[in-house]
Amino acid sequence: MRAKQAKSRTLKQLFAVYVACGGSASYGCEDLHFSAAWLREPPPVASMAAAYVLIENQSEEAIAISDIKSDCCSHIMAHETLVRDGNSKMVHLESLDIPAASKVTLAPLGKHLMLGGFQAPLMSGESVDITFTCSDGSKQAVRFPIRRQ
Image 1 (cartoon, rainbow, N blue to C red):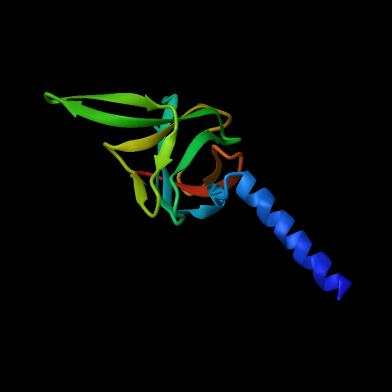
Image 2: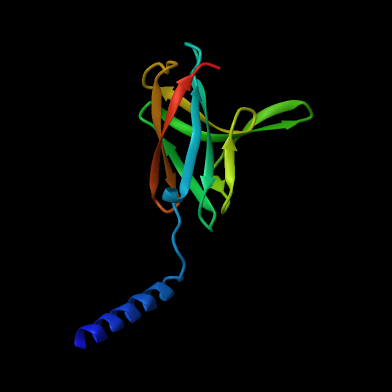
């Protein structure tokens, strides 16, 4: 009987801590599903390359990707191509925000990743791993096959 009362008291204490901390679940990179990832093979003299992927948020809350890294290069930035009056320009995105229960497509002429500072040539038929870090600190690595376009 004492064990049952102690267990009940412990559960009540845990619930009180849960409520005191905001009472909501934490969502992070583990709630994101990445598919159709690929990296465009850059020309031999290029200093930048573009990568694309479909990101699906399977949670009930929006998730922000706050950092993106890979051993293949010194930096990766999220960009969006905007077209106004027939002119296009790339705009840097501080984070990639994935709305709850939604998909965000990174594709040519839209949102995409720009990689620079290559450690070695990026060749078609190879692949690179890119690690996404969400605002809660969780991470997910995704393999990007390199292909010619």
